Image 1 (cartoon, rainbow, N blue to C red):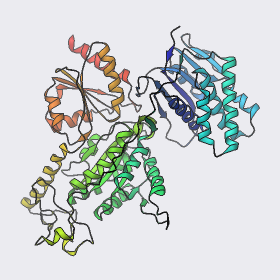
Image 2 (image 1 turned 90 degrees about the vertical axis):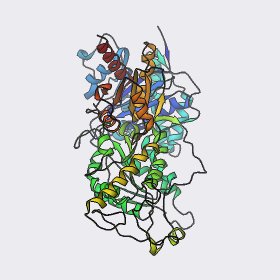
Image 3 (image 1 turned 90 degrees about the horizontal axis):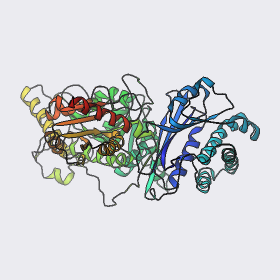
Image 4 (image 1 turned 135 degrees about the horizontal axis):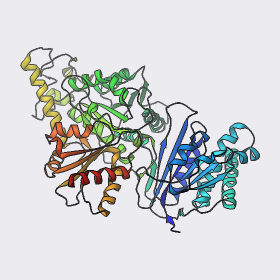
Length: 600
């Protein structure tokens, strides 16, 4: 029998609200501490508790992090999902289930191996109290998994001790539960399985982190001091993390004074208003939200664009439209963000692909907002924002200083005969601004109604066009200021593949597989909008490009057509919009099928 080392996937089926997150995190952390690349995907319901939830762990010595298409071991702890769990096991794989609740014989498959373990009964016999038995049942299955895939128990023990070290009673009970599952599996089950772990040294300069935490840390480092929000899945944890960082680093140790302000507003529109007002006053302020929140914020987004007030918005995208599927991932807000609000608007949008870029793009978003005096969006998604990713340790340049753009102080104002807010003195489309209270000479009044270059109210056609044309020039120049695309050349002038955001992991893995089949494609990942010259050149230099994205309507492809003039038939859509993170298998299947069709 062929043994696969550090190349397999697990899927754990539980009930939401039963405490399985701690056990799953224990497994992830222990594998990571063994030096083995690992990633996790949490598939959870949008209610508080009681419905099924799944957690997928992918172990890849080669460092692949996309969602696996085939599952080698499914751990079924929820009888209500036994049919789905049995179906999820790949041919030749294994199902481990809690036989305290029987498995219908009709569900059995000839091409998988079924392993039963009385996790529930073991906990009833070993522990007291319903809550303790329910919670520790998760640690018992973690112990069994550790035996089945040959985890280093010293590492597992150290990870458990790091988690519960300050709570001796919990630590003791968890150790007992862990050994209960581990010893049972070693005595009664096939251990280890034909796929298993072996120590590596591939994680030493990496961390496990989710995108929302990384983005919140980026906001802190960027100098943000004001956050306004209205809770919404999957963006809530971003502000919660920012608050935690501020409590740790933005409280004066001597006086206890909090040097930050976080406002939970009555709705998303109010949160956007707080952000616009705080930025106008000179603070760096932001709001995290999702698609429904962006829809409600449109009025203030348009106000900030037209009055040229910096503002930063984090859109952790989820499946829509309307309420949609709040706990499923998608990339369905691309068009909404690019042209948010009514009238002729266009916005800077950054597209991180992982938590590392969430951290760095958060910092860039504030600099770009100040530099161009306009709203800037960071378009993450649920998969990036809430799931566990392995990424390089976050690096920071201590020489960094915020780019506040063209802000006139008393000395600069003293050299002007008169300050006019919207006069473009440098010809780059960006008019200098002032901050309130700095100097009476820099005071001005403006509102969302029509205004001329001097800031005066007007409905004159020429004066209105003058301002709108300057805004267009300003945003056009931003195309060379946003993060450059990621490029990988395969030397194929005919075929390219273009993607965005969290699709990166699956597309890069798919490219490796396609290359093994003799199919090479040049690769480009969009990292910012408006599109810069590199994207124009890539499209012009390839006869056809696959455009891979996670929405039904090919929104990235539509943006590329609208902004670059590339003919529609030169861009082949590859779309997945079911709400699950993208898998490399899907990309490979779509590309090979389209190429086969073209060759007929």
